[in-house]
Length: 202
Ligand SMILES: [Zn+2]
Image (cartoon, rainbow, N blue to C red):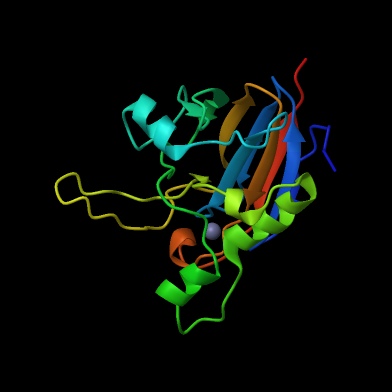
């Protein structure tokens, strides 16, 4: 289940996966074709009630735009992941994973899809993580500019180009959920795969 090599693994379009990371491992998330979002979740592998927290992280970072050097905190204010490298500089940590309800709300004329939420729920189920425990995900490459005066937000195509990447270091043993996002607007209207690679610690 847990890849322990430096091989690049593909998450096919509109799907998701889950795997363990050990403390010190690096996770490299790659947008192989450009303009494709990947939702990322991280749970403390020793206590699954501890999970990444958008609210904690944005509060401590004092910005909604996270990049290299920023840390992703848990609901208990512990650091779960550190962003070590980032070739894009625009990601989102405001919006929840897309779901069937997202499609009903924004895309009522399109076929429903279980979206990142359904893909994450299915991938995390073997780890004993129930759907209601899924929080706001760190949305790699998602481009959500916010008007500083009005607070109006927009979901625009990612600015990521083919081969762009973001690199995370695990600060403790984690269960990770990761998707290739399924929502049209988040991904410039087309669905592409996501690649990832794990560089084991030491
Ligand atoms: Zn999505």
